[in-house]
Image (cartoon, rainbow, N blue to C red; front, side, top):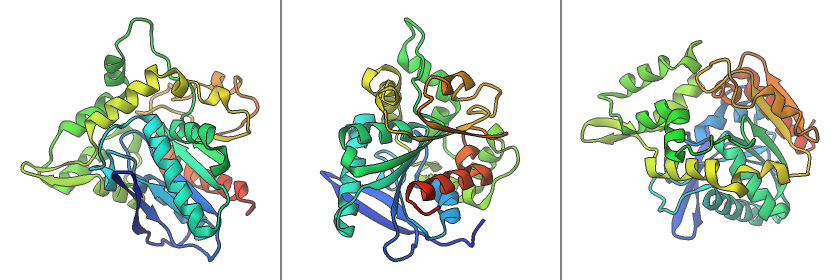
Length: 298
């Protein structure tokens, strides 16, 4: 991996909200990569990707409403609202550089945000690199969406209600997570520590649970959100993990799903799970290389 460079904190005024972001140093006039994280994540998930890009692109990784530096941004939440926020952020960025679309990458829930933004504002996005998401999530007939959400995101939702006596205790919790069985890298530690905020009991996650529940309900029930990939005809680079959210054998995107979308370029990262497909070395490198190819830097 390239020599580490420190990003700076920036923000974008979007209506009544301040949307926070990280921006990594870049070469003058570099093309833009706008990055969108997952449902309980934050902007630091794209830190490893930015390190591989190493200034060849202007990497701007946003904190969505209810997360990270945007944790206090007001409701409503939801995939549609996030897509509107992303469109406003891109518009401000392109205004600074004199116009032109940008490359967008999304991970997990961020893939649906990117797709919906591209559908409504195709002039803002030139290419997309979508990481372990975008396919329609199944909801069994008659199943309550919140119960389904609890099943899929059970450990993540439980984390939002817990408190820890110290940052080290929080780190130890993550060390026991099956997805990080190989260890906590410095990049993952930055992601973990940025998620913490002080509270009377010690420390808790910054992520706002009502935002997660609203977003999750739309992923399961909103037909336009669920089927956004089916309406996307422009070729996309799709990067998928071989394993699932908890590093189990069932991946987030089953292998048979790839055959349903032959117009897209599929890249499977061997041995990866839903987390390290983006934050691990192999996945971060693949995402970075795809972004640079999309920007004409190959």
